[in-house]
Amino acid sequence: MEKLLKAFFYDYKYYLFPDDCASLAELKSKESVTVKRLKEDRCMAPDFIYESIVEETLTIEEPNRLFEVRVNLYTGQEYDEILRKQVDRVCPGCERYIPDGDPRDTGNLDGHHREISLDGVCYEREGENDTWDFATCVDVFWYRISERLNELAVCIDKNDQKKLNKIIGEELSHFFPEIDIYGTVYEGKYTLCFQTEFGYQTVFVLLLDYLASVAGWKENPVAQAGWKVLPYRPEGTFRPKKELKGKSTVAYLKPTQGAPFCFDVMLYHPHPAKLNEKKEQELIQQFYENMCARIGEEKVWMLINSVEFTSEKSSLQTTEEIATILRNKYEANFGNNAAREEGGSALPAPIPYGTSEEQINALPYRDLIGEGMTRCGTLSFLDRDDLKEEPFWMSLVSFAYLYIPRPLDSADNPFQTLGWYLANGDQIPEPLRDPEETKVGSGAIGFAECGEHGFILDCFVASENKFFRTLRTLAPVLQTYGAKVVLVNKDGATVYDCGYQFNISEETL
Image (cartoon, rainbow, N blue to C red; front, side):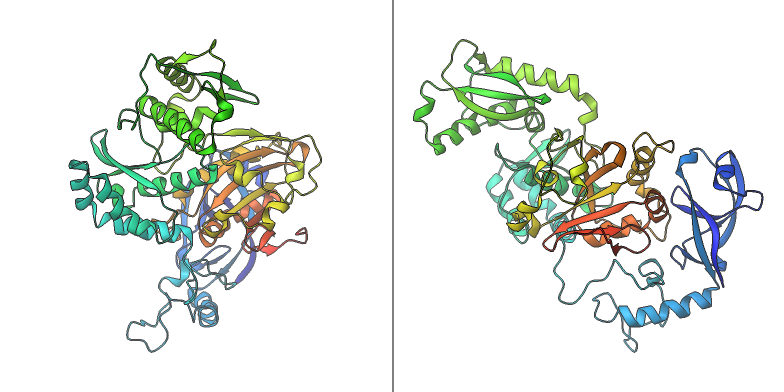
């Protein structure tokens, strides 16, 4: 056994420091180096075994992704003896645990090496009385839907939207609010589209986007069957119930103040003051449906900020003119960048935020924010008063953010480096990364600058366990940066120090 050996972390892999390098700065100056790699095979960082050491020639393409770390080395027998004690202490009561004497018990530690660390922390535990997190619900939902794709294909072929919604709605209702689904053939593939109404909270649209993203993940059985799932209805896939003629003058657009990509719609009515709330919603939804049918629902969500009523006729534009303006604006400002990639997302539309006023009720570190962008103001604009009312979304997901106390203009470019690691989790080596994993635990929604204090990265969290497991793989990076993670859920806002363990910070208020 050897303790606190000098090592380094690069592109999700660990290596012992080479004998001819005295410092990290010297290592960064090299283009390639022959090193002993510490594989996380039958072990988990920062604790490794001698049997999993291999020699490799490492090419260093990006020095800023190098981080120094201290590691411990054990024989495989020593490691397993410690791990066995932790398994016996931690694992009983977990639905995944096979107790001693069970016919399925092999007597070895297969599976535990990638799940539980030597400090006894496991982010895979499923207690007998634990409720499923949102990520698990979504994962199981798509598995069950994948078993009924033949039925859904028949519904689409017959345009039987009622039966299609009944099949999907029965499964979705177990964990998600009621939502209409539209089935179609799009780009040559059977496609399921979520239908929304204008004015939905951005967090609801975010969750629909998450549902669609998980279905599009390459390991997901729906994607493997060749189906598409979209959180919106694409252009040309449906007709609105009441179609507005192209030459009808119905509204005019005006740029949204503070949001250069968006418009406020001034919808014409001869007597706006006489409209009740129900009629207003009916007219807004009619306009919304017509724009979605013409340019695609995703473009409408990206570009239209609000809808108000006006009796002023002089500036009115036709339905086709408005659609053309919106389409051109979208192409000019987003173009292919807004296209959905595998596992990626485009909705809701990003909006700016920032304040120059003192934030008395701000969550930890958020009083430092100067400016930024977020895809979900419902989460990013939370304060302590909002938490007292326990928002509806808290029964589904959590909100979390990383605070990096390191200015953006630091020489090591922490934003770019951390961004690379967060975007390239698929490079985590097996077996620590399960290649058959279909659960998506979290997603980035915003970024905020805190001036000389550092910056903040906002995330929604569909699985707290998977979120912390992901952060644990970044321990060398986050420790070096002195990062904090703030988790916001039904228990309030809790600040944790980042590392191989997540201890509640003394800065938690």
